[in-house]
Image (cartoon, rainbow, N blue to C red; front, side, top):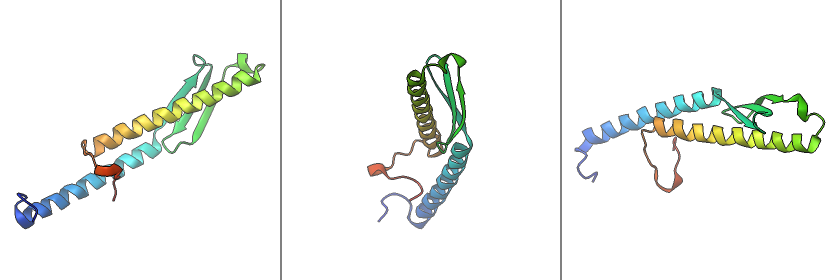
Amino acid sequence: MFGGMGGKGGLANLMKQAQEIQEKIKQAQEAIANMEVDGEAGGGMVKVTMTGKHELVRVQIDDSLMDDREMLEDLIAAAVNSAVRRVEEETAARMQEATGGLNLPGGLQFPF
């Protein structure tokens, strides 16, 4: 039925591996939630720090931007978008590492 997995011993081993992967994923999710990444725009004139939960924890704005509201608004949006991309990239890398490169079909996500 399981074709070459060695019967019940193979299934038990497969279940053990699945549990180990789930634990690694849980640890990766906790690390992601606690991580902080920086995003910036305007050559560093606006910098933001965001957690892995996509919460902004810090915004730094160069004094020279205080008189140009429109530019300031654009740069804040760009810096936040930069941080969001970095969170997504870091999340994907950490989850890839946690699953050992396991590619799940059809966009399935751990845990099931």
